[in-house]
Length: 209
Image (tube, rainbow, N blue to C red; front, side):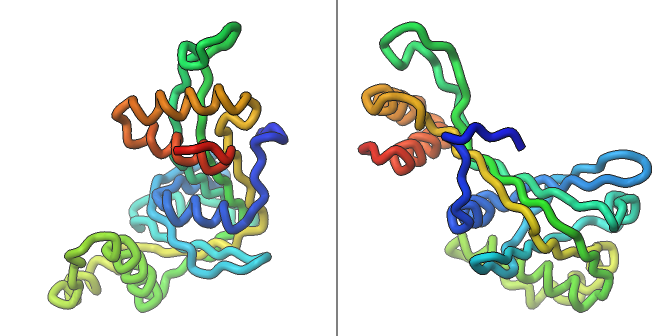
């Protein structure tokens, strides 16, 4: 990924948090018939100073799993908050429009999982992780038989990440007073995504929010 030095993030804890906060990522793999990409929810299964293991699942009807070359690395892409930045917000000239954003790319080797018991484990971990964000969590108990049945139509996988990189393009190259103006306008936009960018800009650049 092309990342100018001022936007490059090498902090694995920060990058891991982006994945946890924005787990609906894009799995990209390659095979003899070309590239494949699927948008799916990812979980951080294991994380350490030098290790990161992700897991997810695909419908078995999705041929990405069978058409991908097992010897080639896969990539998972996670996009955090992003927003258009108008040059009118700076109050000075010359400036041009730009886009502020956070994105993380994880590269590694995939291990496909076909055991139904393990697949159900992946599905349940996914359910519990995302259901925990709601006050009224779904109880899978009454649906256990149905879950067992549909699990046969799913293939799961683990991805041991061998390369992790991220871009935090959040106005680091702008003067503090210009950062403040952008943050103010993003907050006033009424957009949840724009407000997320404003929060990250304030945190990354040590500016008030």
